[in-house]
Amino acid sequence: MKPLKRAWAEVSLDRLKRNVDIIRGMCSAGTDIMAVVKADAYGHGYERVCSCLARECGVKYFAVSNLDEAVAVREFCPDEDILILGYTPPEYAEEIRQHNIIQGIVSTEYAQALSANAHGVVRCHVKIDTGMGRIGLRCGDPRECAEEISRLCAVKNLSVEGIYTHFASADSSLPEDIAYTDAQEKYILDTYDILAETGIRLPHLHFMNSAAICCRNNSRSTLARAGIVMYGLHPDISIALPEGIQPVMELKAVISQVKTVDKGSCISYGRTFSAPEKMRIATVTIGYADGYSRLLSSKGEMLLRGKRCRILGRVCMDQLMIDASDVPDAEPGDVVTLIGCDGEECITADELASVYGTIGYEVVCGISKRVPRIYSRYQEEIL
Ligand SMILES: *Cc1c(COP(=O)(O)O)cnc(C)c1O
Image (cartoon, rainbow, N blue to C red; front, side):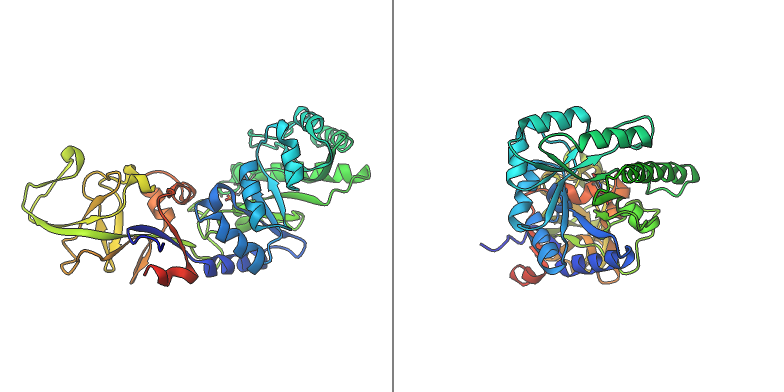
């Protein structure tokens, strides 16, 4: 059945491919891209995104948040490396191993529990908490850290293939934040170098996320864990995106009804909006159950026939109303662009995020399952 023309997300695999090429061009020769495809590829749909990345972009490394995601991605990436960045209960050691997944090791106790549950060798990268305070080995200094990792390398049933860390504020240009990130980076580099001095030369050492790829590219990172920038959004709006990077997802819906209301007419739940004069109102077929946040009530804007129209009153579960007074020829069936461009006007997920105090990441991840993802090559099916 072809997707319903009600509310849908258009995902451009061509843009994804171009973004990957640009990121690859920015990284050093010794740095491979690790595509971060957690959370259904940031809401873009992991099946098509992963097969495009593996088959058409030549990406060899993937990162996910958990075992369910890893097993799902494995189907589309049979030969690639898949790293679970987050926690997997140690009793799943055999599932991890049987799917040839790489597990992030969060602590020494965790490593031992994983080892105890495995009947063969589980591949892993050791996560070091250098200042994010989330997961990872937390040691006094790089020397102690290296000693702990060298002990992990001897744990039965574990094959340590790399170490990694995650930056807490690489997306900031404040001097104190830059210094903090510098210290995080130095910590993991020192740890790696001390390990190497003792003869343990791990194939992988990685710490770059999107913000670091954009602002502080470092050739010593064997992998660049590209997340948000690959999808064409900003790690932080203060960071300039590399030349040519473009958003991969657009969000669209249609007009179901257009009406003219008299001065004083109330619009939507709670009657928070009443028309100050005679107005043209258009009803749009998308709501908060589609992941278009209710926090955008009376605030958000969208594009109709190339013009910006503001939301009137509250966003409902499945519908919302906009001011179409400046679009006299609007009619039912017209496509409304909530994220994307229409004529000269564009609204990005980053802009939408800033309207209600969040980040582009949350906007794209939050587009709900009810919204079909339409991929560039197949857009003609619906449009
Ligand atoms: C999500 C995540 C990334 C990707 O972050 P972006 O800012 O989207 O590039 C990288 N590393 C880890 C550990 C993550 O959890």
